[in-house]
Length: 290
Image 1 (tube, one colour):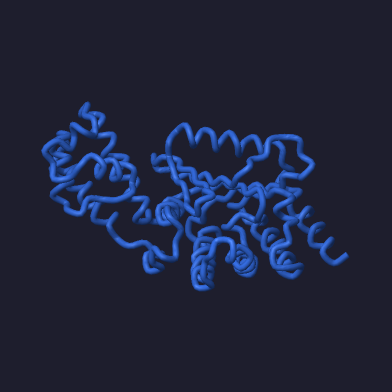
Image 2: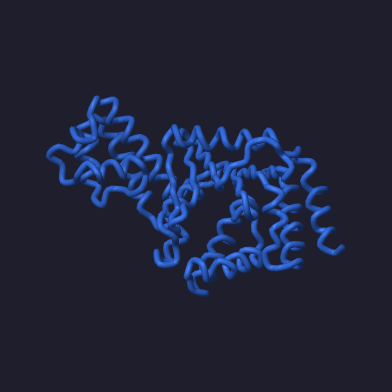
Protein backbone atom coordinates (compact mmCIF):
# COMPACT_ATOMS: atom_id res chain seq x y z
CA UNK A 1 0.00 0.00 0.00
CA UNK A 2 1.52 3.33 -1.05
CA UNK A 3 2.08 5.95 1.63
CA UNK A 4 -0.03 9.10 1.55
CA UNK A 5 1.62 11.81 -0.62
CA UNK A 6 3.32 14.48 1.48
CA UNK A 7 2.71 18.25 1.05
CA UNK A 8 5.67 18.86 -1.27
CA UNK A 9 4.65 15.89 -3.42
CA UNK A 10 1.19 17.43 -3.71
CA UNK A 11 2.68 20.80 -4.70
CA UNK A 12 4.85 19.16 -7.34
CA UNK A 13 1.88 17.17 -8.62
CA UNK A 14 -0.37 20.23 -8.72
CA UNK A 15 2.30 22.27 -10.50
CA UNK A 16 2.76 19.50 -13.04
CA UNK A 17 -0.99 19.44 -13.79
CA UNK A 18 -1.13 23.22 -14.09
CA UNK A 19 1.74 23.16 -16.57
CA UNK A 20 -0.08 20.53 -18.66
CA UNK A 21 -3.31 22.54 -18.66
CA UNK A 22 -1.43 25.70 -19.69
CA UNK A 23 0.24 23.90 -22.57
CA UNK A 24 -3.10 22.38 -23.63
CA UNK A 25 -4.50 25.93 -23.73
CA UNK A 26 -1.52 26.89 -25.93
CA UNK A 27 -0.46 29.68 -23.59
CA UNK A 28 2.99 30.84 -22.51
CA UNK A 29 3.52 31.72 -18.85
CA UNK A 30 3.49 35.42 -19.77
CA UNK A 31 0.18 35.02 -21.58
CA UNK A 32 -1.31 32.98 -18.74
CA UNK A 33 -0.66 35.66 -16.10
CA UNK A 34 -1.76 38.64 -18.22
CA UNK A 35 -4.23 40.65 -16.14
CA UNK A 36 -3.89 38.25 -13.20
CA UNK A 37 -3.14 39.36 -9.59
CA UNK A 38 0.18 37.47 -9.71
CA UNK A 39 3.20 37.64 -11.99
CA UNK A 40 5.01 35.21 -14.26
CA UNK A 41 7.73 34.37 -11.71
CA UNK A 42 5.04 33.30 -9.22
CA UNK A 43 3.38 30.98 -11.75
CA UNK A 44 6.77 29.59 -12.77
CA UNK A 45 7.55 28.68 -9.15
CA UNK A 46 4.10 27.16 -8.68
CA UNK A 47 4.46 25.01 -11.80
CA UNK A 48 7.84 23.83 -10.49
CA UNK A 49 6.29 22.84 -7.15
CA UNK A 50 8.23 25.41 -5.14
CA UNK A 51 5.09 27.05 -3.76
CA UNK A 52 1.30 27.12 -4.04
CA UNK A 53 -1.20 29.94 -4.50
CA UNK A 54 -1.95 31.89 -1.32
CA UNK A 55 -5.59 32.27 -2.35
CA UNK A 56 -7.84 29.62 -3.87
CA UNK A 57 -9.45 32.38 -5.93
CA UNK A 58 -6.22 32.96 -7.82
CA UNK A 59 -6.02 29.29 -8.76
CA UNK A 60 -9.66 29.33 -9.88
CA UNK A 61 -9.05 32.37 -12.11
CA UNK A 62 -6.11 30.64 -13.77
CA UNK A 63 -7.97 27.38 -14.34
CA UNK A 64 -10.96 29.20 -15.81
CA UNK A 65 -8.58 30.91 -18.26
CA UNK A 66 -7.33 27.45 -19.21
CA UNK A 67 -10.91 26.30 -19.85
CA UNK A 68 -10.88 23.63 -17.14
CA UNK A 69 -14.23 22.05 -16.18
CA UNK A 70 -15.81 23.08 -12.85
CA UNK A 71 -15.55 19.66 -11.19
CA UNK A 72 -11.86 19.52 -12.09
CA UNK A 73 -11.35 23.02 -10.70
CA UNK A 74 -12.85 21.93 -7.37
CA UNK A 75 -10.55 18.90 -7.28
CA UNK A 76 -7.45 21.00 -7.90
CA UNK A 77 -8.49 23.60 -5.29
CA UNK A 78 -8.82 20.75 -2.77
CA UNK A 79 -5.37 19.50 -3.82
CA UNK A 80 -3.92 22.96 -3.24
CA UNK A 81 -5.46 23.07 0.24
CA UNK A 82 -3.70 19.80 1.13
CA UNK A 83 -0.46 21.04 -0.45
CA UNK A 84 -0.43 24.00 1.93
CA UNK A 85 -0.03 21.84 5.05
CA UNK A 86 3.27 21.90 6.93
CA UNK A 87 6.10 19.39 6.52
CA UNK A 88 7.72 17.65 9.51
CA UNK A 89 10.90 19.76 9.27
CA UNK A 90 9.09 23.13 9.21
CA UNK A 91 9.68 23.67 12.93
CA UNK A 92 13.44 23.44 12.46
CA UNK A 93 13.57 26.94 10.98
CA UNK A 94 15.45 28.17 7.96
CA UNK A 95 18.45 29.23 10.06
CA UNK A 96 19.23 25.55 10.64
CA UNK A 97 19.01 24.60 6.96
CA UNK A 98 21.38 25.28 4.09
CA UNK A 99 20.08 27.39 1.23
CA UNK A 100 17.89 25.18 -0.96
CA UNK A 101 17.64 22.47 1.71
CA UNK A 102 13.90 22.87 2.31
CA UNK A 103 13.24 22.25 -1.38
CA UNK A 104 15.50 19.18 -1.30
CA UNK A 105 13.85 17.75 1.83
CA UNK A 106 10.45 18.14 0.25
CA UNK A 107 11.38 16.34 -2.94
CA UNK A 108 13.26 13.63 -1.04
CA UNK A 109 10.24 12.98 1.18
CA UNK A 110 8.11 12.52 -1.95
CA UNK A 111 10.54 10.11 -3.65
CA UNK A 112 9.72 6.46 -4.15
CA UNK A 113 13.31 5.63 -5.10
CA UNK A 114 16.56 7.43 -4.33
CA UNK A 115 19.91 6.71 -5.98
CA UNK A 116 23.11 8.32 -4.73
CA UNK A 117 26.90 8.41 -4.69
CA UNK A 118 29.44 10.40 -2.69
CA UNK A 119 33.16 10.44 -3.55
CA UNK A 120 34.52 11.21 -0.06
CA UNK A 121 32.12 10.10 2.70
CA UNK A 122 29.33 7.63 3.39
CA UNK A 123 26.15 9.14 1.84
CA UNK A 124 23.99 11.02 4.33
CA UNK A 125 20.96 8.71 4.33
CA UNK A 126 23.20 5.78 5.31
CA UNK A 127 25.15 7.47 8.12
CA UNK A 128 24.94 6.50 11.77
CA UNK A 129 24.28 9.26 14.27
CA UNK A 130 27.85 9.14 15.63
CA UNK A 131 29.34 9.22 12.12
CA UNK A 132 27.17 12.19 11.14
CA UNK A 133 28.04 14.04 14.35
CA UNK A 134 31.78 13.42 13.89
CA UNK A 135 31.56 14.60 10.29
CA UNK A 136 29.94 17.87 11.32
CA UNK A 137 32.49 18.44 14.07
CA UNK A 138 35.28 17.91 11.54
CA UNK A 139 33.86 20.52 9.17
CA UNK A 140 32.58 23.01 11.76
CA UNK A 141 35.69 25.28 11.78
CA UNK A 142 35.81 25.29 7.97
CA UNK A 143 32.15 26.11 7.46
CA UNK A 144 32.05 28.36 10.54
CA UNK A 145 28.87 26.70 11.80
CA UNK A 146 27.73 26.40 15.41
CA UNK A 147 27.37 23.28 17.53
CA UNK A 148 23.61 23.90 17.56
CA UNK A 149 23.55 23.92 13.76
CA UNK A 150 25.37 20.57 13.69
CA UNK A 151 23.02 19.02 16.24
CA UNK A 152 19.95 20.17 14.32
CA UNK A 153 21.38 18.86 11.05
CA UNK A 154 22.13 15.46 12.57
CA UNK A 155 18.58 15.23 13.97
CA UNK A 156 17.14 16.01 10.55
CA UNK A 157 19.41 13.44 8.93
CA UNK A 158 18.29 10.72 11.34
CA UNK A 159 14.63 11.60 10.72
CA UNK A 160 15.19 11.44 6.96
CA UNK A 161 16.76 8.02 7.37
CA UNK A 162 13.55 6.63 8.90
CA UNK A 163 12.03 6.55 5.39
CA UNK A 164 14.28 3.57 4.61
CA UNK A 165 13.09 1.36 7.48
CA UNK A 166 9.46 2.47 7.94
CA UNK A 167 6.84 -0.28 7.79
CA UNK A 168 4.59 1.39 5.24
CA UNK A 169 5.98 1.89 1.75
CA UNK A 170 9.69 2.31 2.61
CA UNK A 171 11.67 4.27 0.07
CA UNK A 172 13.75 2.21 -2.32
CA UNK A 173 17.49 2.93 -2.06
CA UNK A 174 20.30 2.27 -4.52
CA UNK A 175 23.65 3.55 -3.31
CA UNK A 176 27.17 3.38 -4.73
CA UNK A 177 29.79 3.30 -1.96
CA UNK A 178 33.23 4.45 -3.10
CA UNK A 179 36.04 2.52 -1.38
CA UNK A 180 38.13 5.62 -0.46
CA UNK A 181 35.00 7.13 1.16
CA UNK A 182 34.50 3.94 3.18
CA UNK A 183 38.14 4.05 4.30
CA UNK A 184 38.00 7.71 5.33
CA UNK A 185 38.10 7.19 9.11
CA UNK A 186 35.55 9.71 10.37
CA UNK A 187 35.47 9.80 14.18
CA UNK A 188 37.91 6.93 14.75
CA UNK A 189 37.84 3.14 14.63
CA UNK A 190 34.80 2.57 16.86
CA UNK A 191 32.64 4.99 14.90
CA UNK A 192 33.71 3.34 11.64
CA UNK A 193 33.02 -0.18 12.91
CA UNK A 194 29.53 0.91 13.88
CA UNK A 195 29.09 2.52 10.47
CA UNK A 196 30.20 -0.63 8.64
CA UNK A 197 27.75 -2.68 10.73
CA UNK A 198 24.95 -0.25 9.92
CA UNK A 199 25.66 -0.46 6.20
CA UNK A 200 25.64 -4.26 6.41
CA UNK A 201 22.23 -4.25 8.11
CA UNK A 202 20.78 -1.80 5.59
CA UNK A 203 22.15 -3.82 2.67
CA UNK A 204 20.13 -6.81 3.89
CA UNK A 205 16.82 -4.93 3.49
CA UNK A 206 14.70 -5.78 0.45
CA UNK A 207 14.33 -2.12 -0.52
CA UNK A 208 18.06 -1.36 -0.31
CA UNK A 209 20.78 -2.05 -2.90
CA UNK A 210 24.35 -1.10 -1.97
CA UNK A 211 27.33 -1.61 -4.27
CA UNK A 212 30.98 -0.89 -3.57
CA UNK A 213 33.00 0.92 -6.23
CA UNK A 214 36.62 -0.25 -5.75
CA UNK A 215 39.40 2.30 -5.61
CA UNK A 216 41.24 0.34 -8.29
CA UNK A 217 38.37 0.79 -10.72
CA UNK A 218 39.49 2.17 -14.07
CA UNK A 219 35.99 3.28 -14.99
CA UNK A 220 34.13 6.54 -14.53
CA UNK A 221 34.06 8.17 -11.07
CA UNK A 222 32.05 11.33 -10.38
CA UNK A 223 34.02 14.22 -8.88
CA UNK A 224 31.08 15.37 -6.77
CA UNK A 225 28.20 13.69 -4.98
CA UNK A 226 24.91 13.10 -6.77
CA UNK A 227 21.38 12.24 -5.68
CA UNK A 228 18.65 11.10 -8.07
CA UNK A 229 15.11 11.16 -6.66
CA UNK A 230 12.49 9.22 -8.62
CA UNK A 231 9.04 10.39 -7.55
CA UNK A 232 6.76 8.23 -9.67
CA UNK A 233 3.02 9.04 -10.01
CA UNK A 234 3.85 10.89 -13.24
CA UNK A 235 5.97 13.44 -11.35
CA UNK A 236 9.35 14.57 -12.69
CA UNK A 237 12.54 12.85 -11.55
CA UNK A 238 14.70 15.36 -9.67
CA UNK A 239 18.46 15.52 -9.03
CA UNK A 240 20.46 17.24 -6.29
CA UNK A 241 24.02 18.13 -5.40
CA UNK A 242 25.70 20.55 -3.00
CA UNK A 243 27.81 23.46 -4.17
CA UNK A 244 31.05 24.93 -2.84
CA UNK A 245 29.04 27.95 -1.67
CA UNK A 246 27.24 26.02 1.07
CA UNK A 247 23.99 25.74 -0.89
CA UNK A 248 21.93 22.83 -2.18
CA UNK A 249 21.16 22.72 -5.91
CA UNK A 250 17.94 20.92 -6.91
CA UNK A 251 16.57 20.62 -10.44
CA UNK A 252 14.24 18.49 -12.55
CA UNK A 253 15.52 19.78 -15.91
CA UNK A 254 15.68 16.85 -18.31
CA UNK A 255 19.24 17.65 -19.39
CA UNK A 256 20.53 17.61 -15.79
CA UNK A 257 18.55 14.50 -14.87
CA UNK A 258 19.92 12.72 -17.92
CA UNK A 259 23.49 13.70 -17.09
CA UNK A 260 23.25 12.56 -13.47
CA UNK A 261 21.61 9.31 -14.56
CA UNK A 262 24.42 8.59 -17.00
CA UNK A 263 26.95 9.32 -14.26
CA UNK A 264 25.27 6.90 -11.88
CA UNK A 265 24.84 4.16 -14.49
CA UNK A 266 28.52 4.43 -15.45
CA UNK A 267 29.57 3.88 -11.84
CA UNK A 268 27.16 0.98 -11.42
CA UNK A 269 28.93 -0.69 -14.35
CA UNK A 270 32.26 -0.47 -12.51
CA UNK A 271 30.96 -1.44 -9.07
CA UNK A 272 31.01 -4.84 -7.40
CA UNK A 273 27.78 -6.89 -7.30
CA UNK A 274 25.47 -6.10 -4.34
CA UNK A 275 26.09 -9.57 -2.92
CA UNK A 276 29.77 -8.68 -2.37
CA UNK A 277 29.00 -5.65 -0.20
CA UNK A 278 28.70 -7.42 3.22
CA UNK A 279 31.97 -9.26 2.67
CA UNK A 280 33.73 -6.06 1.65
CA UNK A 281 32.45 -4.21 4.72
CA UNK A 282 33.45 -7.09 6.99
CA UNK A 283 36.97 -6.95 5.61
CA UNK A 284 37.17 -3.21 6.23
CA UNK A 285 35.95 -3.66 9.80
CA UNK A 286 38.48 -6.41 10.41
CA UNK A 287 41.31 -4.22 9.12
CA UNK A 288 40.53 -1.69 11.86
CA UNK A 289 41.55 -4.21 14.54
CA UNK A 290 44.71 -5.45 12.87
